[in-house]
Image (tube, rainbow, N blue to C red; front, side, top):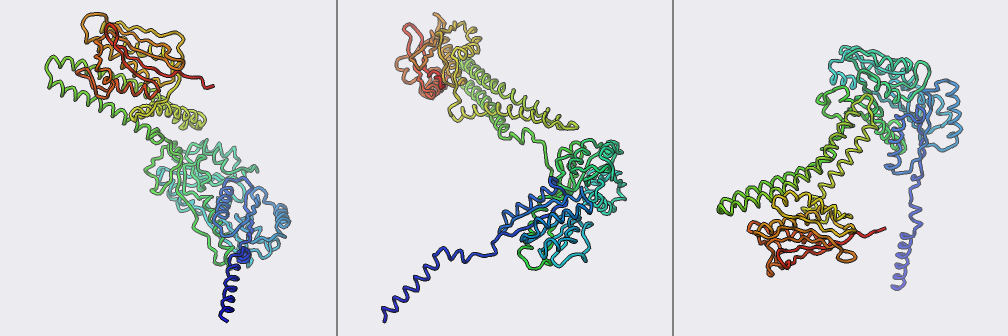
Length: 624
């Protein structure tokens, strides 16, 4: 009996386990509500109007990324600003009936007064009992008595009054405000709204309407406005002659030729010539519409749906503030300022700091050397003092050559950057601005910056003892540069300096600056060695010849004091020196440089007198 009960329990547990793990249970448990919802959005304007394009983008962004269930969005552009005729309205209804009459639409979202009236009248016939959300401005909303039970109407307004107050605060001398609008029904509605809202400011300045004009007449008019005036651009979908436009394009033309600053209330105008204003964000408005869509699709009552707070932001164009000499200190604390001109400091802060640090370090090193010399000279005798002074002057000259070279290399790109920046500023301040010329100037700034970066990078690598950039270098050109640099010193010391370079030597694969440093240090050591001997020949010979098939040997031979046999092994050690004023780092650095290049550095005693320092370097092999 107990055995039977045990088998029964095992069977029950097995059934539960299989049922839990079987993939089919997931399918059965899926929520059927995850089936895609279909939403139809109807816009007032034609396709391509920037305002509704940004609204649509914000709408799609949220529906695609933040919805708990799939939503398929269909979009229609009623284009009733261009075609307000009743015949067109009937054809639009026929089109919607044909496209959506037999499809399962879950929600109709209508944006704009004209399509809202259209759907209010014909929506039940086309869409049946599908929920409908009508969104329009406060002066566009239809009569609530015409709404069906499946419809809800929401309204929002523009902040014309806030933009008017901003104009008053930024330009306190303003006496006249010219409000620009067109001749389409939408243009006239916006004009009516602005007139009512701006009525509170009539005591501050006179309000004039530039409405229902032809585009040509409008552009001529805005060039002749009285002093201490401003423009508030609303829209122009159609002018007096019946021509249709994209309002932003008209606004850009108005701002370009107007003799007074232009303001607006839509963020899609920003960057096209307006100074700024309390701007309604199209993208954010679209995102809020998406929130309404999600609410409708997840609730049973349309009465619980409310329009969120309208997204306004006080925004200004830095270029227009400069154009009209508007003081930024007058801007509200929460303002956003766009399109600021980027300065060398803001763009290349690290590079500028690096240059300052390097120059400071060089200056500090020079100061420290002078201070050290003074301390040493006080403790030494008069004879040693003269010798120390000569050695000190030699070090100062060497540091001066390095500092002068760095300053020269940095001065050229920094001067070019400044010139290009000034040119870019002039091109942007012109009316109209010349962005192509400014862009070319900015390209020059980038090129100058890269040149300065290379100089800084090379110095930083030297400080970190990192390998420099190597390339194919002609030995004759490098040697002649060093000889020309030190020739005056050699002449003053009555020393003969001769070059003996074999013909047809291949280029060396090395760093130009480091190779110059090695040759320069060896020649200076030879000069000091010769000066330590009285009488006899005073000559230095720089030779170069092929050592092997892949290396070149360069040597510096002098007729100086020479070296002792027991000094040969110690001569290249750090801080070992045979000169009273020496620091013992020159030859150690030279050996490190040569060995980093894959070569070797050594010294031999000449049979008669003096010494010869030799080193090898690899040739530049053709990689092609």
